[in-house]
Image 1 (cartoon, rainbow, N blue to C red):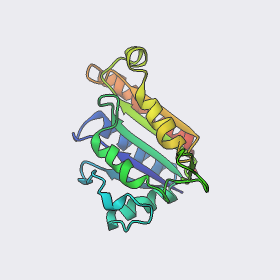
Image 2: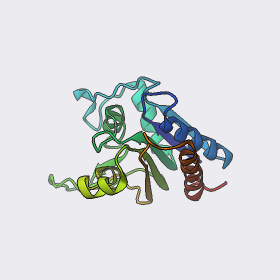
Image 3: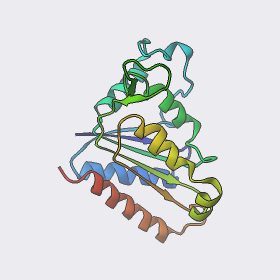
Length: 198
């Protein structure tokens, strides 16, 4: 069973990288095939060209590869920081180019513009691990936790993955090594909960 793991953080040695390492190690230990991409390290090009928009568009080989991987993945794990209540631009661009019609969703027969999609992803579960420097109570009270809505409703819910879990670790900038150790144990436990040993 293949699990797709996507990391989007520009600084090596970041806590996001530590989360990704724990995710990959746990999945490997539990017997899964891991498809891992560090979008910054790989210099993924996030801009969606106009010629790629159509469902039947001819795709560059790298984008076609990402589409195949997402289509066959039985699980998805995304790791990124909270920037302005959104994923980093490189990850947003990855969604734009890879979660495309015919891969992640299709519009239903007879749709007259109301935009009711049919999700195509076959993943059994999707996990999102975020980091933030905003305290959770302020994130919820002042900003309404936009990342929850984006990932749960606008992306995975729309594309057919109902089994969704997101965890935001905060405040990272003032966190201690002991706190981070506990958080990484939580990452391990969460991954094992959703993707137990095969």
